[in-house]
Length: 133
Image 1 (spheres, rainbow, N blue to C red):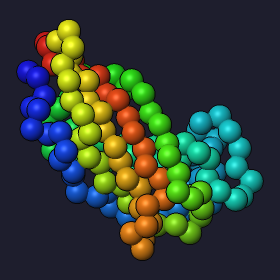
Image 2 (image 1 turned 60 degrees about the horizontal axis):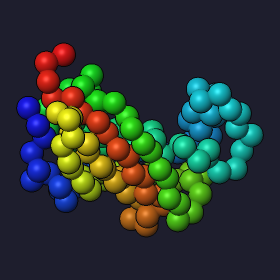
Image 3 (image 1 turned 135 degrees about the horizontal axis):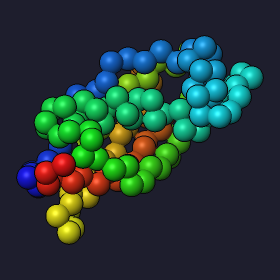
């Protein structure tokens, strides 16, 4: 079943606050094949929050994760993420089109700090297969 076009422009509730600690950043860097010796988090660190926001969106819309292929991911920074930040992500469905029986879903997740200032915006393209698995 195709995703409903009325989702375009809809924002979902923010994720729970995520405290950024050196321990979390170090674990993320290790898991992604890098190292962390202090300073700003790796450039791809916001995926931690963006993935939580995406999962909440999929759950709210009853879309199965196993029907999703991740097509693209971009990060646009206002400032670096550093330990001590407390961040949340708010996902908005930016675009939706159907091609060859698949839904191409464009999302944007705004990552904000505890003061509500935008730290980073992530955009992702998700390809959803609505047919029988």
